[in-house]
Image (tube, rainbow, N blue to C red; front, side):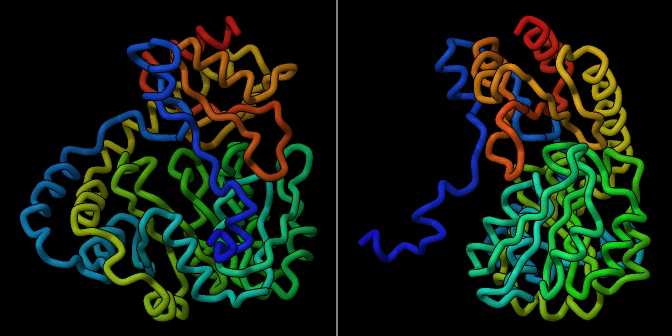
Length: 352
């Protein structure tokens, strides 16, 4: 019966996950593992988010609001008067945008190396994925990217980029928007940790979607809440393509609660920025400047896999970058964690 499986799944390993902390603990006999592989927020959710989620459980016998009205209103209070859509994580938003605009066989352009799910999701919808490599310093060749987008309805660009950590300048994004005829999905999952603000571009360009998530700065990774700024013309069609009742009522309530606690956001940003600077100063390998809550490290002459295994033996879980399209096999990505996790990591990598 395996012949029934589509070729894009039968011949591919799919999304590559980091090892779990429990697996590392069992394998190496370690009680407490530093979890620095998944770009999670090391801080627990805002008390406001926890309280809102607990209250929402009382009405979990009812279906959630399919238009996420309360969350959209909270997003407008937080960001301003923009159009928003939601999904199960940003992954859900990505899949729905692809479903909305891309026909099977059409091209979807992806700037690489980057988050592999753009290509996986596009291929799963029958699209033809066109990877456009970044320059050697991981900056975007805007001219080459625009050229590759000719005839494509949709393109993906990540800024700050996962896993390299660098941002695409505002002017470069605007150059792309002015040069392409299709839609640009700009993934801003980590933008809260940077000094760059792409939101004003929404006022000037109707071919831009800004993808966001509640998983990172708002510490709700386990509740899977994604959202996006969308142009007015796209919103009704997105809702037609979206899975009904995709976001549960507990996640919706927690997300609205988290948005009402900006002090928690500032505390998290301060923590990340301080440790990011320490990582750049104290890691003995080439470490790339980052605008995100992680750094990428060139661990040559080790491979990424070798470095991951050696660090795991010291109780530190990090991510090999070998699964990211367009990267070599000698990079790892390390998230900013709790203070004790960061200290253990610095000790471990300085004795690698």
